[in-house]
Structure formats: C-alpha cells, structure tokens
Length: 120
Image: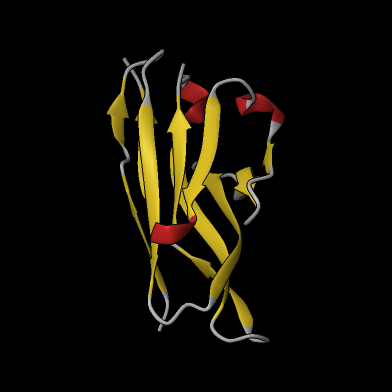
C-alpha cells in the first residue's frame, strides 16, 4: 500500500512564504515524476510544478520566479517552497507522484490535499 502524506499548508499574508512537503510511504521500488497541483473553489485542478527523478523542473507561468519545487530521493519526499504569495495562490494543493512498486508496475498516486490561504 502506497500513500502520499502532505503537510505545510496554512494561512499567510500576501507577500509571505510557505513550504509544502509531501512524503511517499509504503512498498516503493522507485519514484519517477513528482508534482504539485492546486484547485481553487469552482475551478479545475491545475499543475503548478513538476520535477523528474533526475531533477528537471517545470512550472506553470503564474508561479515562475516565486515557487521552487525540489525533492529528496532518499526520503521519497517532494517540497514546494512558495514565496511572494498572492491571494490568487489560494487553493487546495495536492501532491502527485508516479510510483513504481516493482520494475514494471507504476501507478499515479495523490495526496489528501492541504489548504493554502493567502489573505490579509
């Protein structure tokens, strides 16, 4: 059984910072791409940032220069450092990972979501 456990959300003022963490637990052979998505009320879930096992990253345009995705492969953990936060960053943030439980068996897993609210 594989699960992703997120932490680090909360309430922050505009211009502030938060760091999200997501740790994968269970019978894991290896983890390929890890990513963060977000979903604001009434909107679809959108990709925020992604990182491959080799460390290549990709960001949606609205967070470039403000957010940084990183990972610790030894700890099966992905992070999202969010700086210069804006009210429009308010959303539930979900981590996702493509996890191999054996050489050939891979599935996409999702965390439970963590609320980020940017408000004065």
